[in-house]
Image (cartoon, rainbow, N blue to C red):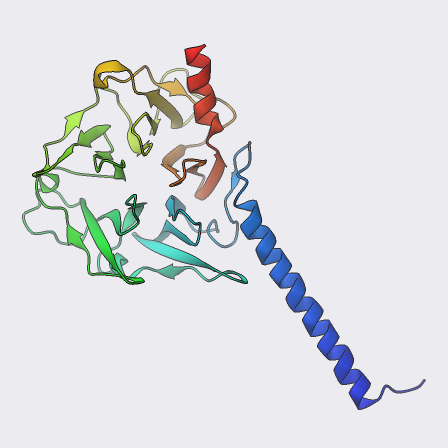
Length: 287
Protein backbone atom coordinates (compact mmCIF):
# COMPACT_ATOMS: atom_id res chain seq x y z
CA UNK A 1 0.00 0.00 0.00
CA UNK A 2 1.39 3.38 -1.00
CA UNK A 3 2.17 5.81 1.82
CA UNK A 4 0.95 9.38 1.54
CA UNK A 5 3.56 12.07 1.26
CA UNK A 6 4.08 14.37 4.24
CA UNK A 7 2.69 17.33 2.29
CA UNK A 8 -0.40 15.38 1.29
CA UNK A 9 -1.02 14.27 4.91
CA UNK A 10 -0.73 17.82 6.19
CA UNK A 11 -3.10 19.00 3.47
CA UNK A 12 -5.70 16.37 4.45
CA UNK A 13 -5.41 17.31 8.13
CA UNK A 14 -5.96 20.97 7.30
CA UNK A 15 -9.06 20.10 5.25
CA UNK A 16 -10.48 17.95 8.07
CA UNK A 17 -9.84 20.64 10.73
CA UNK A 18 -11.39 23.31 8.52
CA UNK A 19 -14.46 21.14 7.96
CA UNK A 20 -14.84 20.56 11.69
CA UNK A 21 -14.55 24.30 12.41
CA UNK A 22 -17.17 25.04 9.76
CA UNK A 23 -19.48 22.41 11.25
CA UNK A 24 -19.14 23.84 14.76
CA UNK A 25 -19.74 27.36 13.45
CA UNK A 26 -22.82 26.18 11.53
CA UNK A 27 -24.20 24.50 14.65
CA UNK A 28 -23.58 27.62 16.75
CA UNK A 29 -25.17 29.85 14.09
CA UNK A 30 -28.12 27.48 13.84
CA UNK A 31 -28.62 27.75 17.62
CA UNK A 32 -28.61 31.55 17.40
CA UNK A 33 -31.04 31.54 14.47
CA UNK A 34 -33.42 29.22 16.35
CA UNK A 35 -33.52 31.73 19.19
CA UNK A 36 -35.27 34.12 16.81
CA UNK A 37 -38.09 31.59 16.44
CA UNK A 38 -39.52 30.56 19.82
CA UNK A 39 -41.43 27.25 19.79
CA UNK A 40 -45.22 27.13 19.81
CA UNK A 41 -45.06 24.31 22.36
CA UNK A 42 -42.88 24.74 25.49
CA UNK A 43 -39.37 23.31 25.15
CA UNK A 44 -36.29 23.22 27.36
CA UNK A 45 -34.22 26.36 26.73
CA UNK A 46 -30.60 25.85 25.62
CA UNK A 47 -30.12 22.40 27.19
CA UNK A 48 -26.65 21.66 28.60
CA UNK A 49 -25.78 25.37 28.52
CA UNK A 50 -28.53 27.11 30.49
CA UNK A 51 -30.71 24.16 31.47
CA UNK A 52 -28.53 21.49 33.10
CA UNK A 53 -28.87 18.79 35.79
CA UNK A 54 -28.57 21.62 38.33
CA UNK A 55 -31.63 23.71 39.28
CA UNK A 56 -32.12 26.82 37.12
CA UNK A 57 -34.87 29.43 37.11
CA UNK A 58 -35.55 33.13 36.60
CA UNK A 59 -34.13 34.15 33.19
CA UNK A 60 -33.60 37.57 31.62
CA UNK A 61 -32.33 38.19 28.09
CA UNK A 62 -31.07 41.36 26.43
CA UNK A 63 -32.99 42.89 23.52
CA UNK A 64 -30.41 41.77 20.95
CA UNK A 65 -30.16 38.30 22.55
CA UNK A 66 -26.43 38.75 23.10
CA UNK A 67 -26.65 38.33 26.90
CA UNK A 68 -28.61 35.83 28.95
CA UNK A 69 -28.88 36.03 32.73
CA UNK A 70 -30.35 33.22 34.82
CA UNK A 71 -30.34 31.79 38.33
CA UNK A 72 -28.61 28.52 39.22
CA UNK A 73 -28.61 26.89 42.64
CA UNK A 74 -25.21 25.80 43.95
CA UNK A 75 -25.63 23.91 47.22
CA UNK A 76 -27.82 26.14 49.37
CA UNK A 77 -26.96 29.39 47.56
CA UNK A 78 -28.37 30.79 44.33
CA UNK A 79 -26.20 32.73 41.90
CA UNK A 80 -27.01 34.69 38.76
CA UNK A 81 -24.96 33.51 35.79
CA UNK A 82 -24.42 35.27 32.48
CA UNK A 83 -23.88 33.75 29.05
CA UNK A 84 -22.59 35.93 26.20
CA UNK A 85 -23.16 35.28 22.53
CA UNK A 86 -20.15 35.67 20.26
CA UNK A 87 -19.72 35.45 16.51
CA UNK A 88 -19.05 31.72 16.73
CA UNK A 89 -21.70 30.84 19.32
CA UNK A 90 -22.22 30.99 23.05
CA UNK A 91 -19.56 31.40 25.71
CA UNK A 92 -19.52 29.50 28.98
CA UNK A 93 -21.86 30.58 31.80
CA UNK A 94 -20.07 32.66 34.42
CA UNK A 95 -21.22 33.81 37.85
CA UNK A 96 -21.87 37.56 37.73
CA UNK A 97 -19.78 39.87 39.89
CA UNK A 98 -22.85 41.20 41.73
CA UNK A 99 -23.85 37.69 42.87
CA UNK A 100 -21.20 37.68 45.58
CA UNK A 101 -21.24 37.79 48.48
CA UNK A 102 -24.54 36.37 49.65
CA UNK A 103 -25.87 35.03 46.37
CA UNK A 104 -28.49 36.48 44.03
CA UNK A 105 -31.61 35.35 42.18
CA UNK A 106 -34.43 36.43 39.84
CA UNK A 107 -32.61 38.86 37.49
CA UNK A 108 -34.64 41.47 35.60
CA UNK A 109 -33.12 43.98 33.15
CA UNK A 110 -34.34 47.57 33.00
CA UNK A 111 -35.88 48.70 29.70
CA UNK A 112 -32.70 50.49 28.60
CA UNK A 113 -30.58 47.63 30.03
CA UNK A 114 -28.49 50.07 32.05
CA UNK A 115 -29.56 48.39 35.31
CA UNK A 116 -30.24 44.88 36.49
CA UNK A 117 -32.50 44.10 39.45
CA UNK A 118 -32.38 40.99 41.63
CA UNK A 119 -33.02 39.67 45.13
CA UNK A 120 -30.38 38.67 47.66
CA UNK A 121 -30.03 37.63 51.30
CA UNK A 122 -26.80 39.60 51.78
CA UNK A 123 -26.71 41.99 54.75
CA UNK A 124 -28.80 45.07 54.09
CA UNK A 125 -28.65 48.06 56.44
CA UNK A 126 -32.05 48.99 57.86
CA UNK A 127 -33.84 45.99 56.35
CA UNK A 128 -36.55 44.35 58.44
CA UNK A 129 -36.39 41.09 56.44
CA UNK A 130 -33.53 38.92 55.15
CA UNK A 131 -34.58 38.94 51.49
CA UNK A 132 -34.27 42.30 49.75
CA UNK A 133 -34.21 43.74 46.25
CA UNK A 134 -30.93 45.12 44.87
CA UNK A 135 -29.75 46.72 41.65
CA UNK A 136 -26.49 47.05 39.79
CA UNK A 137 -25.71 49.71 37.19
CA UNK A 138 -23.81 49.01 34.00
CA UNK A 139 -20.64 50.98 33.44
CA UNK A 140 -19.28 50.41 29.95
CA UNK A 141 -19.52 46.63 29.70
CA UNK A 142 -19.16 45.86 33.41
CA UNK A 143 -21.65 45.79 36.29
CA UNK A 144 -20.93 48.05 39.24
CA UNK A 145 -21.11 47.16 42.93
CA UNK A 146 -24.81 46.57 43.69
CA UNK A 147 -26.87 48.75 45.99
CA UNK A 148 -30.07 47.99 47.90
CA UNK A 149 -33.23 49.75 46.79
CA UNK A 150 -33.77 51.04 50.32
CA UNK A 151 -37.15 52.22 51.61
CA UNK A 152 -39.94 51.31 51.17
CA UNK A 153 -38.55 47.98 49.91
CA UNK A 154 -36.59 47.30 53.10
CA UNK A 155 -39.81 47.43 55.13
CA UNK A 156 -40.98 44.04 53.85
CA UNK A 157 -39.91 40.90 52.00
CA UNK A 158 -39.59 41.55 48.28
CA UNK A 159 -39.23 38.44 46.12
CA UNK A 160 -39.01 37.89 42.35
CA UNK A 161 -39.04 41.53 41.16
CA UNK A 162 -40.48 42.41 37.77
CA UNK A 163 -40.21 45.95 36.43
CA UNK A 164 -42.34 47.66 33.77
CA UNK A 165 -41.23 50.33 31.30
CA UNK A 166 -42.59 53.01 33.64
CA UNK A 167 -40.41 51.71 36.47
CA UNK A 168 -43.24 50.22 38.55
CA UNK A 169 -41.92 47.18 40.40
CA UNK A 170 -44.08 44.09 40.95
CA UNK A 171 -43.18 41.28 43.36
CA UNK A 172 -44.42 38.01 44.83
CA UNK A 173 -47.68 38.37 46.69
CA UNK A 174 -48.81 40.21 43.53
CA UNK A 175 -48.06 43.62 44.94
CA UNK A 176 -46.80 46.74 43.18
CA UNK A 177 -44.42 49.50 44.22
CA UNK A 178 -45.36 52.48 42.05
CA UNK A 179 -42.56 54.75 40.91
CA UNK A 180 -43.00 58.54 41.08
CA UNK A 181 -40.71 61.50 40.47
CA UNK A 182 -39.93 61.49 44.20
CA UNK A 183 -39.24 57.75 44.42
CA UNK A 184 -41.26 54.63 45.14
CA UNK A 185 -44.52 54.48 47.07
CA UNK A 186 -45.39 51.79 49.62
CA UNK A 187 -46.53 48.52 48.10
CA UNK A 188 -50.15 47.98 47.20
CA UNK A 189 -51.98 44.78 46.24
CA UNK A 190 -53.51 44.37 42.82
CA UNK A 191 -57.10 45.56 42.49
CA UNK A 192 -58.91 43.27 43.06
CA UNK A 193 -56.48 41.39 45.29
CA UNK A 194 -55.11 38.19 43.73
CA UNK A 195 -53.04 35.45 45.35
CA UNK A 196 -49.90 34.42 43.51
CA UNK A 197 -46.12 34.65 43.26
CA UNK A 198 -43.33 35.30 40.75
CA UNK A 199 -45.12 37.95 38.66
CA UNK A 200 -43.87 38.74 35.16
CA UNK A 201 -45.34 42.05 34.07
CA UNK A 202 -45.42 43.06 30.42
CA UNK A 203 -43.47 46.18 29.58
CA UNK A 204 -46.70 48.16 29.02
CA UNK A 205 -48.36 46.65 32.14
CA UNK A 206 -51.23 45.26 30.09
CA UNK A 207 -50.87 41.77 31.57
CA UNK A 208 -49.11 39.83 34.33
CA UNK A 209 -48.16 36.16 34.19
CA UNK A 210 -47.70 34.57 37.60
CA UNK A 211 -47.49 31.24 39.43
CA UNK A 212 -50.20 29.96 41.77
CA UNK A 213 -51.93 26.84 42.99
CA UNK A 214 -55.66 27.19 42.51
CA UNK A 215 -58.67 24.84 42.38
CA UNK A 216 -59.09 23.31 38.94
CA UNK A 217 -55.36 23.45 38.18
CA UNK A 218 -53.25 20.70 36.66
CA UNK A 219 -51.39 19.52 39.77
CA UNK A 220 -48.67 21.66 41.31
CA UNK A 221 -48.36 25.40 40.82
CA UNK A 222 -49.60 26.51 37.40
CA UNK A 223 -49.00 29.63 35.36
CA UNK A 224 -51.88 32.11 35.16
CA UNK A 225 -52.37 35.46 33.47
CA UNK A 226 -54.42 38.52 34.37
CA UNK A 227 -55.17 41.30 31.91
CA UNK A 228 -55.50 45.00 32.69
CA UNK A 229 -59.07 46.30 32.68
CA UNK A 230 -60.39 49.86 32.99
CA UNK A 231 -59.58 52.08 35.98
CA UNK A 232 -56.37 50.16 36.76
CA UNK A 233 -58.32 47.08 37.74
CA UNK A 234 -57.32 43.55 36.76
CA UNK A 235 -59.44 40.76 35.31
CA UNK A 236 -59.95 37.25 36.61
CA UNK A 237 -56.89 34.94 36.60
CA UNK A 238 -56.83 32.67 33.54
CA UNK A 239 -54.95 29.37 33.59
CA UNK A 240 -52.54 29.11 30.63
CA UNK A 241 -53.88 25.61 30.04
CA UNK A 242 -52.40 22.15 29.40
CA UNK A 243 -50.17 23.45 26.63
CA UNK A 244 -48.05 25.11 29.35
CA UNK A 245 -49.09 23.59 32.67
CA UNK A 246 -48.53 20.00 33.83
CA UNK A 247 -48.80 18.00 37.05
CA UNK A 248 -45.37 19.41 37.95
CA UNK A 249 -44.64 22.90 39.33
CA UNK A 250 -44.50 25.74 36.79
CA UNK A 251 -43.07 28.94 38.27
CA UNK A 252 -40.68 31.88 37.84
CA UNK A 253 -42.14 33.22 34.57
CA UNK A 254 -40.36 36.05 32.77
CA UNK A 255 -40.99 37.83 29.48
CA UNK A 256 -38.31 38.69 26.94
CA UNK A 257 -37.60 42.38 26.36
CA UNK A 258 -39.16 42.25 22.91
CA UNK A 259 -42.27 40.58 24.34
CA UNK A 260 -42.05 37.58 22.00
CA UNK A 261 -41.08 34.88 24.49
CA UNK A 262 -42.40 33.55 27.77
CA UNK A 263 -39.80 31.79 29.91
CA UNK A 264 -40.61 29.75 33.01
CA UNK A 265 -39.16 27.02 35.20
CA UNK A 266 -40.31 23.42 35.47
CA UNK A 267 -38.61 20.52 37.20
CA UNK A 268 -35.35 22.43 37.65
CA UNK A 269 -35.05 23.51 33.99
CA UNK A 270 -35.88 26.74 32.18
CA UNK A 271 -38.45 26.40 29.39
CA UNK A 272 -39.48 28.80 26.65
CA UNK A 273 -42.50 29.25 24.40
CA UNK A 274 -43.94 31.83 22.03
CA UNK A 275 -45.81 34.49 24.00
CA UNK A 276 -48.83 33.91 21.77
CA UNK A 277 -49.91 31.40 24.42
CA UNK A 278 -50.74 34.52 26.45
CA UNK A 279 -51.88 36.89 23.70
CA UNK A 280 -54.28 34.33 22.20
CA UNK A 281 -56.12 34.14 25.52
CA UNK A 282 -56.61 37.89 25.48
CA UNK A 283 -57.87 37.78 21.88
CA UNK A 284 -60.38 35.06 22.76
CA UNK A 285 -61.71 37.18 25.65
CA UNK A 286 -62.27 40.19 23.40
CA UNK A 287 -64.22 38.24 20.78
